View 1: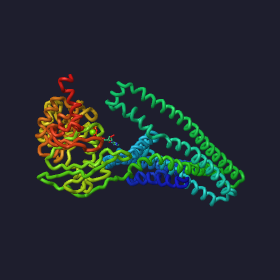
View 2 (view 1 turned 45 degrees about the vertical axis):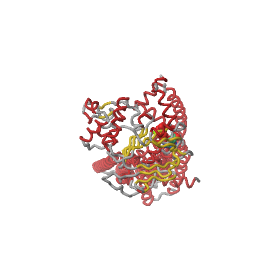
View 3 (view 1 turned 90 degrees about the vertical axis):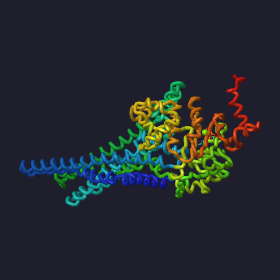
Length: 610
Ligand SMILES: Nc1ncnc2c1ncn2[C@@H]1O[C@H](COP(=O)(O)OP(=O)(O)OP(=O)(O)O)[C@@H](O)[C@H]1O
Ligand SMILES: [Mg+2]
């Protein structure tokens, strides 16, 4: 991008930040204006009162009169402070609420974003940038601060200019305008040095930090400490070594950063102090020289030397504040980019026909699929038809595409080629919430929430107790639940309240109960018993027909013996459906994959092998 375009896009980006603030809470932006104006006026109350009192002394006004002026100035100053403080406090509170709301919207966006986008490297990179920006400069929280800097210097400059113009109009100050012009040019040059060279370098350095790196750092050192399963692995494998590798690298980068920061911040401070010093000294010299020449009174010296200083200094700060705001809001752009990500999956609108007879038929028509960014097909030319009540077992080696098929069925991804239909209509055409309502799925990597056991199962805070008790019993969790301190209203884990830790197998039973509670016409189970003990697994299988009832079921398992009860077994290999049939037919093909898988597993149970 050319420099000019880059500048324009930065300015646009900065404006967008404040538009988001404004759209979320108008007052968060609006209140900054009167507050800044009051802060700009504030110094002139003292300045003018002092000058007036000094003038009064020289002209022999009564003490009483001057005392009133002093008192008036104090009261006015007090009133301005009070009003400014009041507005500022309201602003602070609203700002906090507003920014929290913006971050909440970001979290909500996570829930509505297409699943495939959440898994994509591009989106992950944006998220990493957001995390990095929040670490170094607090992201959106800083936006109001930069606007405050800008408005303070802007109003400071405007009010100062207005006072000086009135002064020049009422007094004949020879060379005044030229002097001011020289001083402003000087402040302009130093502020350009400050903003374009120093500040820009500093922020550029910050912005080119590798965001991914920061995420790793955060993950391990901040959040990592709260995730016990990471800590377990860390202990056993002495992950300290890995972490300290990152830490050393991070320390080196921080040292580097500190050096750059010290160099440029020091230089910026020097330029600022130089500008401020030179404008103070020269404005006093100039005004005193005019007073000595008899053009103005002594009280004017106090009043206007201060005003010139204020005005020139505000001018310097204004240009620096603009640069600061534009550069710093660059570090909020990740958030804006995230909020602007648009879903890519076609969103259908068709309702799913609510059938009492549950006559739903799902069909894969020659479906092939590559994960975004991948060159290899994870599923190839897959066709299958499932009618209501059918039970399909899927077996196959790791990575053969079983879970991928389920993800496509749930529309977490759309097929790259071919299509999936529900009752003859492309599933893309259905309203997603309606479509997904006919599926109960237990994923291989299912997760539990740190909510109540019953809420985990119902996925709602409204619980149908009868149904809850029934599914808990079906999956063999009744006894365990009765022992919990609040029955099925006990919290899982200890994040929100005092809860229970559950074993891997218990978690799997809960996941199964969750699928049963939903009571959808299709039930999809991806390795639902992998963590169950042999007795629990046996119980589930012996009750399988009762559990699944007349639902259509897709069932994935590596334990081939558990698939025997299914009349229809599909064998996947390298993304393709290579065999289909019942256990006996499949086993009779001695060259087939099923025979190979079956024998590999069976030999462990074979007396001869032991
Ligand atoms: N999000 C993803 N992005 C890219 N490739 C993926 C992704 N998820 C899975 N794959 C790849 O797709 C292929 C099929 O994976 P899938 O999870 O469907 O296998 P599976 O048959 O369920 O295996 P397992 O028995 O281990 O559960 C694998 O090679 C895997 O590496
Ligand atoms: Mg899988």
